Length: 313
Image 1 (tube, rainbow, N blue to C red):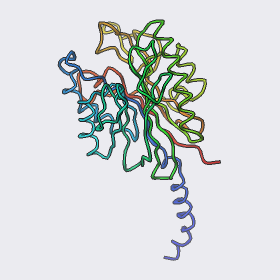
Image 2 (image 1 turned 120 degrees about the vertical axis):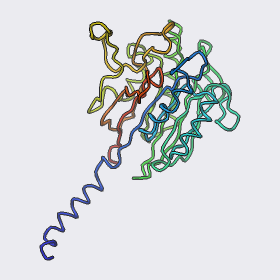
Image 3 (image 1 turned 90 degrees about the horizontal axis):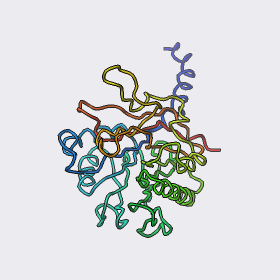
């Protein structure tokens, strides 16, 4: 027995080191455009045949932004995810009201793990010149908004903001200008809401890194894909069925084009996680899992990053 006391200080130091380990306070944050419910999607692409796969993918996340959520899908999120320790927050883009309180229109939202985070408040703003009111830019095809939540990490008491958005989609000169204006509005509003707290911005920005809208975000905050210590996989990577060679240059594609082959068939990186200074990105992945499905559970891959906050100064 007396020999055990010789090693007791070592054991205590090891336990203290584990308790302070950044790994214990890291978490998975993500973004997932789940694809809107539509009866034009047939077979395994129909929502009823892929929704369980979407829910299963999301259980790898502690917090995740969501796009293209219809009223029907929101109700199913609440039924499926809230029983699995998650809370869903979504706002309808047509009237800016919360799911369950009269929301109308496609929702942008988020889910978070309730055993890990506590939400003290949440809200939304519109990507327009009147961000507090349901509205859109004149050039925007649809009303677009940003949904946010202020979360407290129950493991260490750290507070941060999580933002989720979906920028306008047209692949035109007008669409590019609109997204640039929407990005500028989002940056101003996020700065005002977050203040000095760290934050994560997730979203389907509908723009590739060559666009001005991306450049605005990247000039302010960290693109998790670029600053991660480790990249897991290379995203969607279509191969020529005859030669096995890659069909497109580039890495990290998140949009597959496999559901909308007639109008937008080409892969691209348009789904992002941006982090404020003070957020460390350990690893990043555009998840290519199919979970036994014949195709991906959505036309977008979910993206996720393993994050932790730098120590308080």
